[in-house]
Amino acid sequence: FSPKAIQRASEIFPAHAAAFRVGDIALPLSSKGGCAARAGAYSHVLSFGSLAMYLTHSEMAVALRNVAKLASAGGSVAVTHFIEADGEPKGTIVAPISRQRLRQLASAAGLTNISFHPMKYQGDRFMMTARGPRVDKSGWAGGPSPHTLPPRPTR
Image (tube, rainbow, N blue to C red):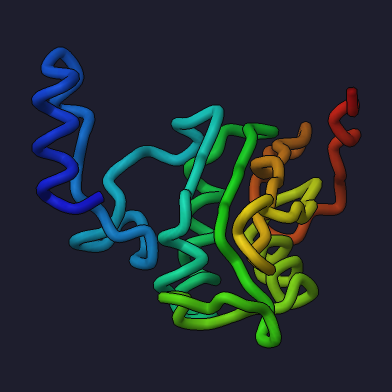
């Protein structure tokens, strides 16, 4: 979030003001300017456009690794506003990406149960949902997983 967004969030939620920080999801979590949150801290990690719209593929790879680290084991992840190279409207999207390439990046980051969904009223843009890395009895967490979680039930 931008400094102005953090300031506004702090005004609206003063009891939680210390929890809002400026951080760049495309930088390693522990680096200066990176997202300052502990690994596995969130049951739900969401990105509404910023990860998909304003990053190069190499920055997306770092950001997806960070998303996987921030998500609790089996936590939910949703990232919106991706578009393939031939999709329209591109608008402000810096680096269109195929679903196949995005699946590779997300899987390499340790995300599981990766799926893609159209975004109604957004032209050819799509979103990705996934689960955070699963931790097994050996303590594995992250990286390409030998495990998968069962799919969520559909209604």
